[in-house]
Length: 387
Image 1 (cartoon, rainbow, N blue to C red):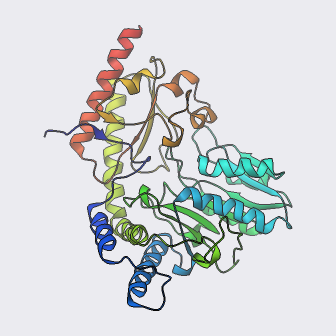
Image 2: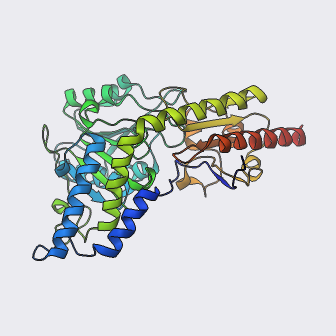
Image 3: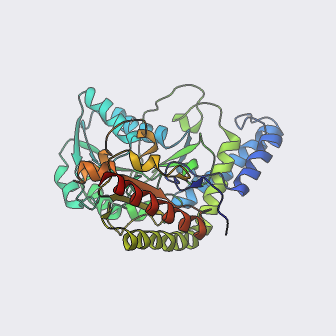
């Protein structure tokens, strides 16, 4: 089978919009242009109905209720609203937060801001497999801790954290629990009740929806989570995120969540098989192939591998027909090895010669075979040149 190049294997950075989602997005752009806050005529009512339906679809994906969904511009805004909103609302109770050394910059950035404002921030280190021990989270709690934030699935190495156990620890300590689930949503089952979460961040473009829209799930009962907004204005989204709603994007986000919920089991199984086959071939035909992060629990389409004997930076340059990365897309302009891999204790030379491969809904077996052949050829050639 002929493979069209470049082959896209960077689904952790973003996903292509599913054609079914794109059809809905275009239809809403053309036909439903009303403002959902316009409560006095049919154009506003039509838009409001679409938003309501999307709210239900997003909530269903995570096991919440529609009234607990606050639409945002993406997971970054959702993370900021969760962390900064909780901090401002609960500063009279305490000024301490707990997170991990695996967090995405969308969480790490707000934490730095809070540290600059005098908050205490404790970072819990993951082990060499990229997994956080719940007992280490428990040990980091203090009487003045108000929030714990743990990434659900790490965006570079794909490891899935033991959120249910961490959530129980937070519940017993009466500490709020937030998780950035941007990479997890649509790839693994999410159940906010089972996880014991109080806040959860999502992004449409990570699950085959459009860019520029996301959501924060905010628990309304047991406990009712109180936040202070980052923005002020028209009162939309329960005053937590004012501004005219992005109706086409929200409707498309809802449809993407509906499709993800329906297709997740089959997608996950297929991607797991493709990923495992790719790793087996790389390790079977090359020496010095190191898997970064635990084999399981891991996102089904994620593979992060390092290749011994190659100088950093050369491997990506040799793979021009593959869309892969060396780490987070948000950090791709920064030089040096991945901070996440360094946190796991991966030596600098291996961390600099790593690839993050993200398989997705449209990835075919032929594309994976092509990628394997290209990577094997590139590694073999570069090692020969550097011998």
